[in-house]
Length: 511
Image (tube, rainbow, N blue to C red):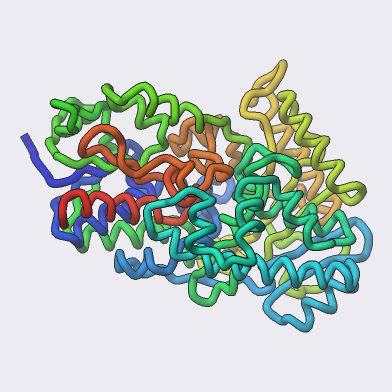
C-alpha cells in the first residue's frame, strides 16, 4: 500500500496552496483531483465551438482579495495586470461614469454624474473601508475569532460598532450611513460587492459581510481593486501547482477520492474511485463541505448539522462570450478605456426598487427581467488570450438567477435567457448580439456539473457567514481537515483556506 504524510482531496487553488505549504515543510504530499484538470473553478479554457482558439477564464475571472502573503509563502509567481480604469457605469442616455486611478478625474466625473454630496459620501465610505481593510488584514492569516472578538482585538475603537454592524447586517444599512443622495450610486456599490455570489439583497443580513470580503484587495499595485492574471485564472492555479511540485508534492488528475477511511476515530487513508487505497494520517479536503460529508462516515451529529446549516443553492450565472469585436456603447463611443473596466448594467429608474423586484422573482423560481449584470472584456487588458482570428473574450456575470426554475427547466430556458441578457447589453451597446460569435453559459446547475461544486454555489458557503461562523479547519475526526472556500475567511480565489488549513495541520503535528 502506498503511504504518504498527507493527502489533499481536490486540486482547486486552495488545495494546491495547502499542498505547497505542507510539502515545503517537508511532508510527503499527494493531491488527488477527480476532474482531468487542476484549478477547480480557477481555469483558463477554450470552450467556444465557433472560436476554438479563444482562451477565457470560464469560472472565476478576477484576482482580488488574495493576500500577498499567500503568494510569498508558497513561492508562487503570478503576473498581474491592473485595470485602469476599473469601473464603468453606462446609461441609456448620454451620461456615463468611468473611474480609474486619476483621483482628480474621478472626482470630476463622479460629481458630474451624481453630485458633490455623493462624492463626499463616497470619500467617507472609501476611507472607512480602507481603514477596516488595514485592521482586518492580519485576521485573514490566523485562526478566526468571532466577529465581536475580532472587533475588540483588531479593529480600531472608533470603527468597532461599524465593523460589527457591517459583518452582521445588510449592506443597505451600512451604505445608508454615509449620506449618499443618489439611489443609483448605492445600488452600484451594493451590487458589485454586497450581492456577488450570495443570495441576498439590499436588506438581507450577511450582504455587508460579503461587501467587506470583496473590498479586501491588497495585492501589490491593486490600490484596493481586482486584477487580471496574465493568461487567465488558470495561470493562478498553474503557479500554485508549480510551487507544490517544486516542493515535492505529487498531483494526480482524473483520480477522484471515493471514500475517506477512518480507523479508531482517526483518518487512515483514502480509497480512490478506481479502488486504489492510499494511506495517510492527515487528509485535507479542498472540496466543498457538502462533498466532504459524502466522503467520510463517523462525523458527530452536531458537526453534520453545522455543515448542513451552510447549505444554500447557487444563484449566480456566468455567460462566457466570444465577440467578433468590441461593443460600442451609445453613451461613450470614443475609446476612453471603458472596455478594460468592469461594466455595470443596472436598471435606470428606481434602481433599488428594481433590484428588490428582481430578487423577488428569483425567490419565486422565475428568471428576472433585468438582473444585475457585470460585463467584462478581459482581452482588452490581456490580449494574449485572443485567438488568431482576433476574437475578444468577454463575460456576463449575472446576479441573481434561480437554481431551480418554477414550471420549467434550465434546459428549456438557457438559450432564450442568454439571448435576453444580450438584448439588455444591446440597450447600452447596440449591436452586441450581432457581435457575439458564440457563448458558453454556466447557470447554477451547470456550474455544479462543470466544476463539481455542490449546488453550483461559487463560494461553496455564503460569504454572509464570516470569521468563526465559517467552517473550522479542524474537524472532530483526528487528522481530517477542511481547507476549501467554506473555511475562514471567505469564498473566492483567496487561498487563505489552503494556507491556514495547512498551518493548522503543521501546528497539530508539532512542525
